[in-house]
Image 1 (spheres, rainbow, N blue to C red):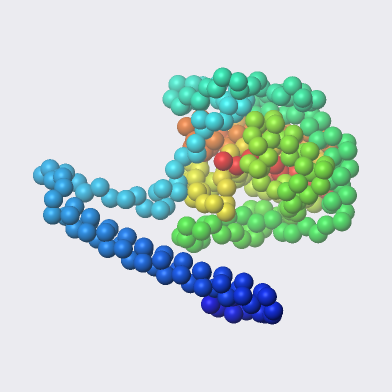
Image 2: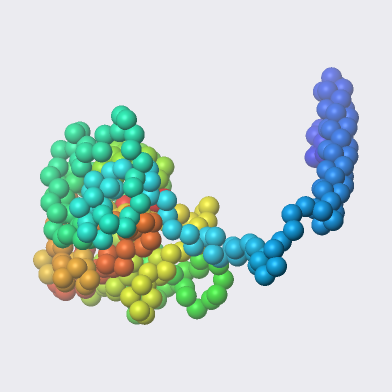
Length: 326
């Protein structure tokens, strides 16, 4: 407090006010220190009491140990409140109907498949996992606005998760053997049109806009690609997907809406190798929607996918990633 208050330039009547504030602050700090000292003393006495008396552990009973931070962070994702996810992805998926936990039912929740305000049609192109294609999801006004952002901004090299370190903190690296595209992040609610696009995506999934990551524009030039990966976690060699740590600064992605901003003559499909070699072809305004988790909150290994090579000479594919997070 003394260091902070000493930086104030004290003149005239302000001197009295600041000096009084300083005295109050110092008194307050002294009281806090006393309370902390007293609290730690009481805590010690309680712990000593517990060691002398208290419950006796039965012979052979194991001492309970705390789970490590890594184990706590890798818990499955809570799905009870994801009501729209149930109607879109889980209620008719045979993998979820038997073993999955029941979602919480509320009296006034509208869990219809598509919000009544939506002006687009949604087509299911694969069952279990449910994958949807939505034509004209991005309007012409929104497409033109994205094109303006693209022309005014600079793209950076795309990166992937770095698995060479054992740290709990996620790190990234540029790996041109796995991903060669470039990207551009758009600030949340950067303007009215971006905010409208975020609201539309959130409404489709029955979420709030604060559960969306900032929109990400991606660009694939001739022969650029993104190999098979999973949007939620690390794809292991045995085909399983490892959940990333639960951290406040790095939210886990539960659903993906990938939008195509232009037509591509040859290549550039979104390829789902675990879904009968499903390919979604780029079309201006189209979006592909899929869920990254099962109803039990674990990663869905069947939604692995890839961005295929853009084969046409001189062709460029522009896309928009919209990720919903837990």
